[in-house]
Image (cartoon, helix red, strand yellow):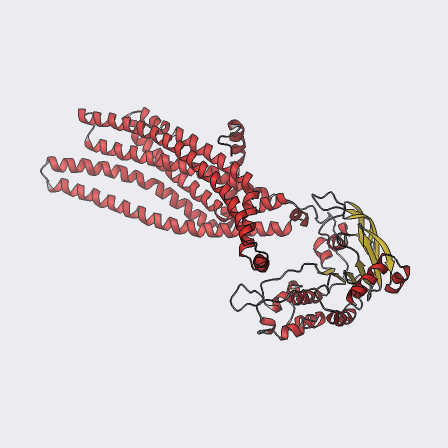
Length: 610
């Protein structure tokens, strides 16, 4: 790790570009909690002015005590002293009350801001293209944005508020010090210059280190997940991977820890030198003022006033430097948040978007479609052509990597093709309103999501906007062959499918697939897209399910992606894919008669089964 910035001037210029994020955070604070923000501003002003009253009351109290002693404790003088004592006590009590109230306000404001920013991140995560999830840079952005959003905005607001409060008090203290000597405020500020340089330098180093180490932190998080997740628990034990992952995790943590410790050591040494300089300056100033008091140039009350003002000024300067460092640091880190929020999807609605049709009247057509995934040099589809007539059940078969699952993602417009066009009833997908287009399809993806929710909720998520009834959910479960599985669960449709929660349970891979099928069937869309719907079924369950599926798909268009020819054989038309193109097409009988790739694979599968 570099011990010093490679180009301090360049880093300072870069740092200045981050400072505009401060107004953006203030705007976020106002949007999230306007009332709390106003209350916090008022409290800052009051807390900033109270120390001034404390200083002047202290001077009056000391002078009053001197006067009372000079008169032998005459009651009028003692009464004045008591008044000042009462006033000082009242100010100190008010300071404590405001401090407690301000803490409550900051906590309420911080929670609202945190939730508001989490909402922004969630909306952006849902809005960005699926292509972003193919890029490691996206995960780096997301990692930093999520981590920074948890506390940096609150730290920035608190530090800014403290800086403003300290600034108000410091200006007043400077006004108190000027009558003692114009150079005194300058000495106060000069004593803080080395500390300011240390704060800025260390902050830049920490930010640069954080950006550089994000991939390492994410990898350490992955090993931590692998060691503690139920998804990996069985293999970890079977293959003895525990020590292996522990070693990898500890190796990364040792690297991160070593860097942090070295930075802390350098920062501590620099702060020690800066603090020594400030101590020397303040010591010289105090020695000069004591010498003046001994000569009778100032009274004891004035000396007490000066000591209070200068000592508080030093404390305020140190506190302000800490606040500046935190503001600077959080401004740099919040650049990650706003950089993430600036991500814009490329798959968007056209200026004059057409509403998708409620039914498929003619066909779906892929015309000379070429596509490669972002960041990949391998072509997933090359000059691909396919026509799926309305009302037919079409099967797509072929080896892994042939591009079958890619068709579903393109058809649902998760991506746009690099070349060619995809039409629904003669209209390019890119001309449709995106939301209405996606409602044309219901999909079972190859790796369906296992939601931590009840059985009924898992199925209902297929069409939450329609608010499906209990009867709709039961009908979808029956169509998918999941009703018998659900009947065996302890709570039926209200069983919680989340083993990590109280009273939760889990399903087998095949049972989860049936539930995902029910979720897909619930949505009454004109086009059904199924990716490996029978991969986790035995042959008896497969045959039973296909009979029910043909009845369910009557009047609708269906595309089934499968490796199982015993599933594909029930389709009206079968297309064989290889290398991103269709190489054979026909019915089951026609393809067997051709004795091509389909026929060879059919014989291989049936021989393996027999």
